Amino acid sequence: MKKTILWGILLLLSVVWIQHPVQAQESEYSMQEYSLESKSGGEQKKIQAAIDKDNHLLLPVKEIVELAGYSFEECTRCGKDEIFDKADEDAGGKGHYFVNWYQNLLSYSVSDEVVELSVANDKVEGVTYSPLDLFEAMGIKISIDSGKKKISLSSNHVQAVYFYSSTCDSCEKLEQFFSEMEKKYSNLSIHKYNIYEVINYDLLIEYGKVYGLPDEKVGFTPSVYISDQVLIGAEIQTGFEECVKNYSQKEPTTILDTPKQENSDAAVRQTDKKSVWMQGLTAFGLGFVNGLNPCSLSMFLFLLSLLLVNRDKLLRCGISFLGGKTIMFFLLGTILYQVITRINTAVFSRWMDLFMILFAICFALLNLWDFFTARSEQYEKMKLQLPKGFKRLNHSMMKWADRFSAQKTGMLIMALIGAAVATGEFLCTGQIYLSSVVIMVQKGVNGILPVVLLVIYSIAFVVPLFVLMLIVYFGKKIFGVSEIVLEKIPVIKLISAVLFVAMAIYLVLT
Image 1 (spheres, rainbow, N blue to C red):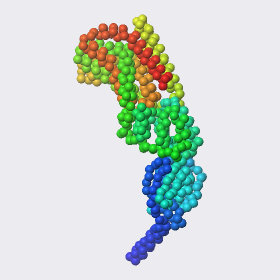
Image 2 (cartoon, one colour):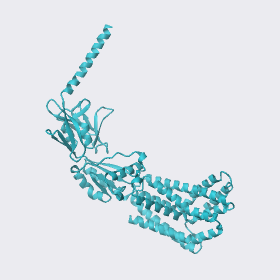
Image 3 (cartoon, rainbow, N blue to C red):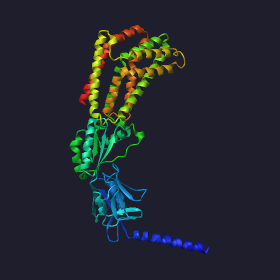
Image 4 (cartoon, rainbow, N blue to C red):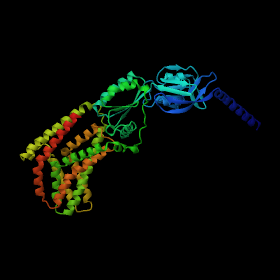
């Protein structure tokens, strides 16, 4: 029992002895309240500064460096306080700053450079305090008005926010430009966001809102937000370096957090309404013209001829078939869009426009060829049509599906056949669709808008077929309708040729 009491007394004395130096150490500092503000127009706040026994001023590291644009946190592995750039955790190639409060120095994690401090930095009540030369070593200039208890800071840490797309030519050229700028200005950090990630596009829209851009300029790439300036397109190379040089004289760049995924439809809400309507009408027009393709029309007429024995069956199974085609075309467009956006086209972007221009010209010429052959009624010589093997396969599938058209499963089977036929027809009807998707990707259409446009296109594609079905349903004979379709093939081919020429001109001009 006596031994237990003795050990307890010794333990208590050891705790008191251990705590005493810490309390004595902290009592060596007196605390004073100062007003902290950024000379470049940043936020103002109240902070507690520490005065040591020799009347040296020590400032709280976290408040100072965060106002200057750095992050501050304690390393869970080594316990040291780390200061680093949010945009680049190598802090411009230097690595993390380590504030070693127990060793009186500032060091870097990936170099041998060590900066000796004039006064011992310390932790007071768990908060790291350091002398002015720590901040000066980081490029943070501090001025103190002791009478007004006011601290002002300016930082040479320049931050810029850059939005780009991986398929634009000018964005590829800017990569080299920014690389040269970062080498020239070691204090420059550029936050880079590829807008093909929906969440980054939402952030771009938010930046346009915060910086007060007019609707017609919101969502453009490439664009740079630096200080209180917004540089778009060609303005970047002509004005960016000047903004870097004058950064300390203006407001610091607004750094926004990436928005949450559930807000991903912000892109559509913020996009210019007129632009959305125009893109929607364009998607409908392209889909409608593509739906007039003779391959698609002739195949659907064959199906209607099978279903004509029962008008109710014709309407029910015809709608199911068209529903299957619509869903499949939407899925094919979605897959195309995802594949194209995930390709690292930065390497190929300089050739992308040229390829699409040649692609459009090629199919314009092929449609012109078909226009002249159709006018001379030499339909078998047309270039843009399904191979005979595919036609036979599609006819066989439709005949097989017709056996079940009167059963409960008939509508489901017709929908599946519609999806299968749409997949095969893509060889004949997919050129306009492919061109539209590629242009959509190249011009930075993003957010939820591509999904909306693909839905509009897919629905518009089956509208001519739906009208054709109603004509047959209300009494027009299949033979008469087929004759009308044959007569209109030259016109359809001419329209398609003009459409591809328009695409080529659009790509050249933009």
